[in-house]
Amino acid sequence: MYDVERFGIINTGNPKHADIFLVTGSVNEQNISVVKQIYEQMPEPKVVVAIGICATSGGIFKECYNIMGGIDTVIPVDVYVPGCAARPEAIIDGVVKGLGVLAEKRAAMDKKPAAAAKAEIAADTKAAAKAEAQANSSEQKEAEATVAAIKEKEEA
Amino acid sequence: MSVTVIISIVAYLILAPIAGGLLAGIDRKISARMQGRFGPPILQPFYDFFKLLEKEPITVNKVQDFYVMCFLIFIVITGCFFFAGGDLLLVIFTLTLASIFLVIAAFSSNSPYAQIGAERELLQMMAYEPMVLITAIGFYLINGSFAISEIVSSEKMGILYLPGIFLGFVFILTIKLRKSPFDLSMSHHGHQELVKGLTTEFSGKTMAVIEIAHWYENIFLLGFVYLFFVNTASWSPVLAVAVCLVTYFIEILIDNSYARMKWQIAINASWIVAITLGFVNLLVIYYVR
Image (cartoon, rainbow over all chains, first blue to last red; front, side, top):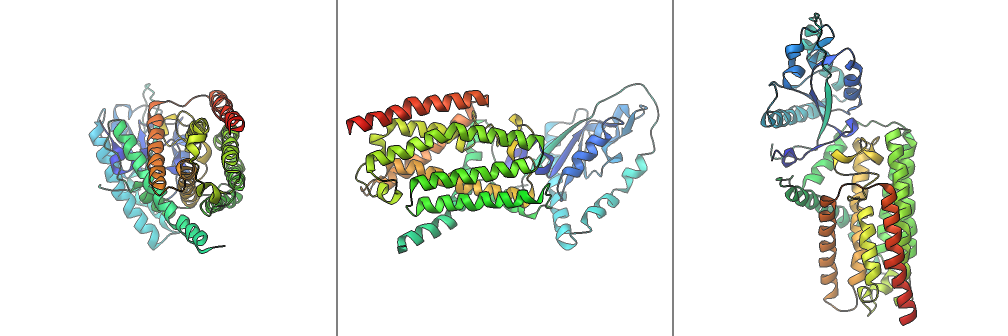
């Protein structure tokens, strides 16, 4: 049985209780605001994990007229878990990797609490670069957003 | 105020969060094993607590932090009254006040999810209050006093006179410990929750305060179970603590074997239990005594 709770991780539907944001599926015009809003509701420090190739780069839907591409075109992504579909072990591995990033961000927050939020967004410059490359096609794919809470790392 | 009272208050203030946190960790571990998973480390609730303290504070409405602090303070006061051997009725009323502060805190956020959680919390309070009061009356009938210090030092063991009330109390303990099938306002299991119920709008330090208040509350509630089994005999505290642990295990078992039920069922069931087990028990000891 795939158990992420052995790392102290539990799934929550509430962005305000979450530390790690798991996003599956690509971003389209319809759900940009949803993804952004969930991301903004999460308290710092926070980590975004893109699950699956659609979330990573847009996958086969990359060229669709309504698809922005990967999640990193909208919000800064820290860990990519490619695959179609991504294996459960790979997802768990990605989330645990996210724990490491989370610890780094927390340490960075202690040093400069005020500037932490801005620095993160700037750090992901490749997100901005990718955002332009959208073309047209007819397929549409809804991105599902899942929020997972990481309740402190242990054993990781 | 005697020295023992002060010692028991200080012991409660220091030991209750530690014991409550450990209990929560054991709860999560046992729940995971019941579901065929490995489960988190026992100390996970403490890691979570310290993690919450380090999170960025996001407050929807400044006043909610005040109410949540009041919730913690009144839970702690309730526990102090209880373990200092105070009046059982006073304990119940301060507990109600504490719960009301949590409800107001959730209402003050104006979030629809938190408000649904707050409404359900009120419904839950309606469900469990009668049984809690019957429990206090039961202790009064056999001991002639509401004072916990006298109940503890009585020669009569509560459970022998109040078996029905004990069962009724364990029933509503499911509501108070926020276990399925009656975890209507706030569940610990993400998959059966409206966002996060009562605690939707609380994060960071505010959430940490709620967590620690729950640990204080759980230990105090198990203190109620303890009260049923303690008398002047030297072995009775050991028996009482053992029964507390068994009761908590049974609550975990119930939690893992039921899905959440509708609030109508929660209210009907707990009132029926309060009337049949609680009230009938009261009548019997009133006339037989």
